Image 1 (cartoon, rainbow, N blue to C red):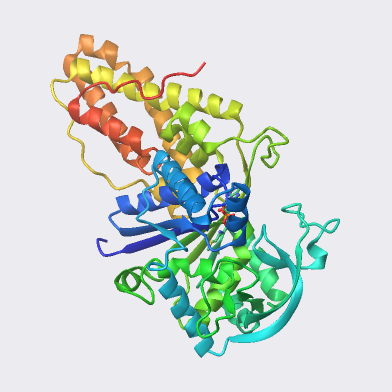
Image 2: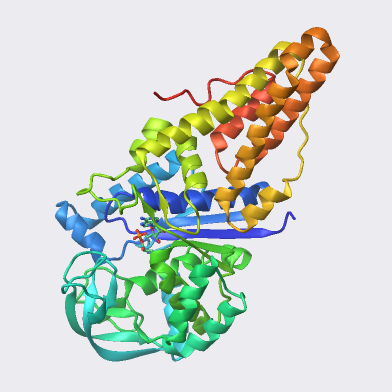
Length: 475
Ligand code: ME8
């Protein structure tokens, strides 16, 4: 097991604004999956980062009246602060503006596509949506605007390099059908297959330097810079040192899981595999596609006043409560909902009255009646837990852990060790020891989900002491 490796990535986020709940979800889900694999003893590598060579960012900096670099550094710092508040255990944060870490690999990959004859220059005319950082078609528009961003797209006529995506449609289809490239869940697999059934068109892979002030220069053609998605997708290998110093690349590629939201499925399950095939690089093993978070059934928006800011939520409830909510109440496969009311109710019921109360009850008994700490042994995870985690059904894994918490609560009530210990000290102590042992088994499953709480509980067990109030009730 020790030499088994596990490499997982999040999307790299646009640093044009602060991260919102959706980004917090992607990253927390990713962290839970990585922590689980780390606990199994696998060698893990966890990558996240920011997608910086984009017009969106330039526009946002201009709107803020700042130099792009100053603006970017501030936002990226803010991303990292949020990740630290969420206890995201990433190994590397890649920035695509990093000319040392990212650019050589992006250029090396471009050269590979070129060598395969998959890049050609063509005059192009079309509509560009800066919100999407992608060309869109007339039929995508509603009242002349992009329905996702509410903006009128730019009409563009220019020379671009095109990538022969069409050449790879059939090969990608076969790999996805055969689960050589797993697209999970099945609904997303069907979605991408139906897109592939229609056939893929070649895509623009560069923009004229005059059209955008940022971008990685196209090798041997000063007039062009790489299109942002071509540049961004390559981060998954450049971060490992592809085209530069490839020890990590050799060790960790192919990636085990790319975690993405449903909005960027086409880029990850069609364009990216085609680029890799063209370059003769192994494909990702799994693309895990989660849904979108809404609040009160609606997209969060300032106008509706239903925006829940992750920083605010963290300040109110703390790291583990936010992680818990996301893990349990947002399905990794479907759209999910979060409201302040539900957060509070879940906090009080599941954490304050549930886990917090259970740990306090048991450790109070242990501290009072046992003369020394219960020796805990590491036991393998139960099948119910591993099954759910291996399938990325994190919410189901959490439900299972909370069933065990409930069952343990019932055991205390049913066996009443606080009474038994008065009549038969030996018997009472044996029950308390069993309770502590079960609490320790539960605690190990809590580590990927609520790491700070898990640590506090195991420390309390080892010190044979009641922990501090883990989740004070909120009124
Ligand atoms: O697309 N609910 O970056 P981005 C859940 N830079 N998740 C959400 C969400 C929501 N409402 N909104 C966004 C980009 N996300 C590109 C990616 S990767 C090579 C380049 C999450 O900042 C979800 O994971 O717009 C989505 O895929 C990602 O944020 C998009 O972040």
